[in-house]
Image 1 (tube, rainbow, N blue to C red):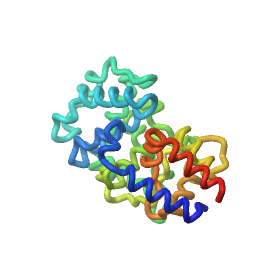
Image 2: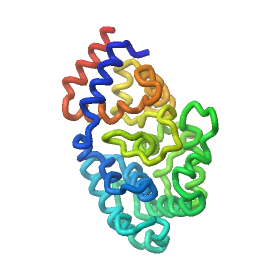
Image 3: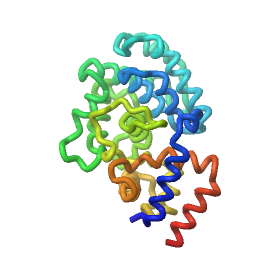
Length: 266
């Protein structure tokens, strides 16, 4: 449980960093270019699935991928042919992600939009009434995209059943479900209270120091425990602190260290 003082400080950090200008170098900014949810959910899937490595390289790769497929120039992604997707991404590379893998992901996404009407509808199809969080629905979403793509997306679609924290998929859900100055939203049928924190090594280290988890692995269990800790501050929107804390660790590490030290004295 977070001390009341820590929860208050988290709210002040959120208000300080939850601003559009703070996201200029975050891959979420690619979603701002698409006012319509159908193209935004595709742009978000690309940006989140490539969100590993150095941020400047991430942004360069996302811009390249979106330019190659011509998302900005089409009215509907389903109008982009599968042959064009494969051809345009030939030779694409982001660290160990190949153009074939990204093409597989996007072909699965295109087919999901055609079959289900949208990626949101595809996701909601697996979201059971009364679900505690989005984890099981994420697994079903991955299963469906793998079915539709012929399982060609490889590591871009990790499965929570394997214990993965699914950081990039949870990041995608944060962008698409939440709506504030940073997260643009677009999916209105999934509750923010169901989201799980995007857990990477940096958030895991912070969670350990804040006492939100004791697990030594940055896995789905530690992500769920950390989310439960943040829910003590805001049960209806526990992942709202993700961007603010990440941004603070970059621009004001001393301030973040002070928060951690205060938590340790509580």
